[in-house]
Amino acid sequence: MPGRLRKVSPLKNPDRPYYALGLEGSANKLGAGVIKHDVDGSSTVLSNIRHTHMTPPGEGFLPRDTAQHHRAWGLKVIEDAMKQADVSMHDIDCICYTKGPGMGAPLVSVALVARTLALLYNKPLVGVNHCIGHIEMGRVVTGAQNPVVLYVSGGNSQVIAYSKQQYRIFGETLDIAVGNCLDRFARVINLSNDPFPGYNIEQEAKKGKRLLPLPYTTKGMDMSLSGILTAAEAYTNDKRYRADAEPDLGEDIITPADLCFSLQETVFAMLVEITERAMAHIGSKEVLIVGGVGSNERLQQMMGIMAEERGGRVFATDERFCIDNGIMIAQAGLLSFRMGYTTPITKSTCTQRFRTDEVYVAWRA
Image (cartoon, rainbow, N blue to C red; front, side, top):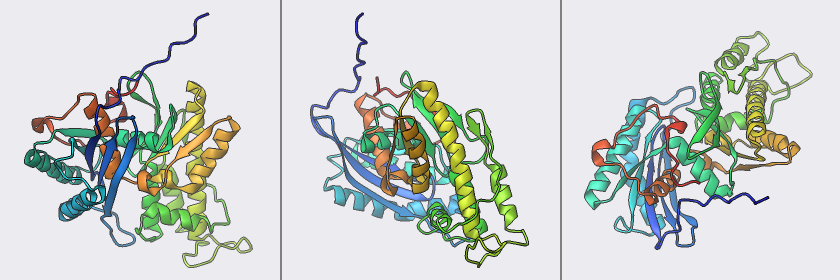
């Protein structure tokens, strides 16, 4: 019986080094990065600079203020990225920007910068899907071959697998994203936004001693998070709640640490369940976690336990690549550019809604 034919990648090794500048600004993180694709097929991160629009504890970030931040810091972030990479704009082969999804005003601000640079230096533009950027950066950093992807961030929560030149969505949130759920609860209990709310919830959860009952809502491959957020917030009005108390199993009190612990454990258990179901469906033994929430060590630990029980493994990155950054946009954009795709200036628009499964992934077999 003849063996299975190995699929050949349509992406050939370049005949010279290629360089791309990536610009990201779909939410409150403004990022710029330069990546190099070498003749041996390797990818090298030459720079990865980021600046965050911070707001006071208890407050979120507004589109208008975030766009003003991106305009104010755009030149500085790009200059730092080019200096760290030790390249000039003349060395750059293409300029990549986040086309969507994301917040409208911040997206437009960064697209305007990308468009201006493209015209000034006569460089081709490449519009990039934000979600694809996360996936492709995760693949190149971790070496994951064909994983089930858990994409969890402030604006998106999806379980994804690749098939026939598309990233197919197997399951997703039916309402709010995981990161949005955690961020909003951080505001309820007045946690700092520095470095980001999810990180501070993670640290607070480590001190939690009590697992409180919260709604566990998975619906097939999908999940719902608005109910668990409402239930967690309701505990802050419970007569047993003490905002300034230390966790103690000996007392009948509820602390912010207990709530952070309970929220994390329940939400992450839901994510593990639907990810495991996708692994079983496609027969994969790899899980790649991407997106800002993916840097949470407890989520990585829980997913690792599940994967190990299935004889598989988890691939994840730290906050340099999990949290929104410009280098992931450069990576996905340069892959697309090497396959012959560019974005004409007249079509260099942005869109707040741009699904992962709408992108033709020309560079994969």
